[in-house]
Amino acid sequence: MPELIHSIEISATPRVIYPLVSTAEGLAKWWAADTQEMQAGVELAFFNRASVYRLRSLTFVPPATAAWLCETGKEWAATRLVFHLAARGETTAVRFIHEGWREATPYFVSCNSAWGALLYRLKAVAEGSTLGPLFTKEGLTNG
Image: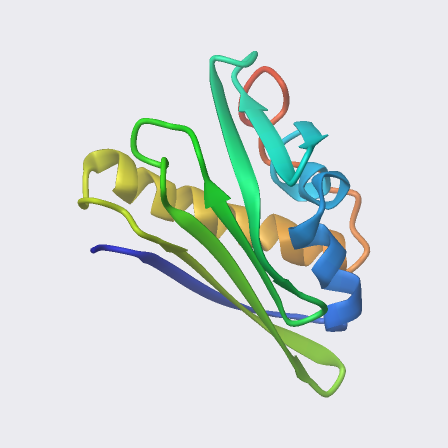
């Protein structure tokens, strides 16, 4: 099964980064503005709720691992989003894997690009920027 893998070094501790990848409030700071906490998970909505992804909490080991199971989406259903955080002195190595894809479609490829941009948003927010989420309620940000 194809998977998307990204790695980024962030100048923040795992304790700072972990809530950003494991809570609805954290995800809303760098991923999607329309993010809501649900029982045992979160819901992220895009493009005026034309696309809604429900993520169920899968594995949470603070402050090292946060894994979500995507329950919705034509191609995202049954995929897993896994964030591994490893302290490296004053920085943290973040390894992200979006696994469980059925096939490498054009949408899969576009998601790879989006995840790259998203992880730079995560880095910015963890390092103190007020850049905000990549996805507003209406669409993509301009910056």
